Image (cartoon, rainbow, N blue to C red; front, side):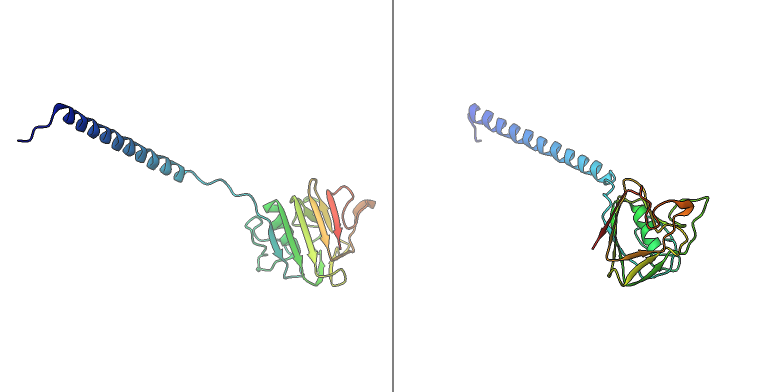
Length: 191
């Protein structure tokens, strides 16, 4: 039989106790980690900030967006019109660019006396910033068809018009601004 001096046995006991305590701390740390990870994993992630969207118009007709706010510029028949792109940008908020290829885009939906929204009359700009970029001032035309103004901005909106022509807007009741009323947020015409 092997006998250890009392001091050696006591030292080995203390080492075993320290090892046991360390293992217990590791186990507690592991359990806490699993609990925290599970709780954090079950919390819904924060809503992402709206990213700037780009819409390319592929129809010169004047038709409304089928589902404003879904991130897709599409009328009921799947075309992306200027009005649908503006409606989508307004519904998403933030800054957006609408690309207009060469062509004449007629605003043909008459304004409604009972409604002042995107779906009738002028194109309401409510998103923080919308840039409408044409191919060139001679080849891209937005025509108001003398039915209403072409654009109406709401403060603090910003409308940037680039490389396009606006014509035949009509301000009713002798008001100013056939293209854009003077009190309509910020409007910038860029090259």
